[in-house]
Length: 55
Image (cartoon, rainbow, N blue to C red):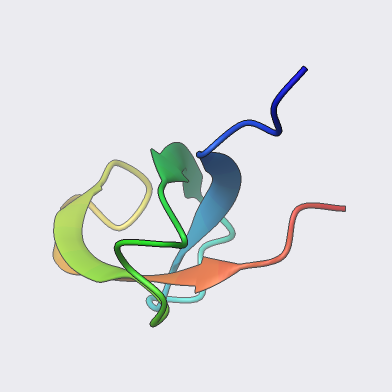
């Protein structure tokens, strides 16, 4: 059976609240780490989320 093309990554808030989203990405098409602006309900505003390791 073939290996899955996608991997699961944790998107951690840069506001320091500890809030995170879980996303999937294809490392073959997107080798660099993901960064996106999304809503942080703890900080109650849109902030940058950066990719972190899932423990």
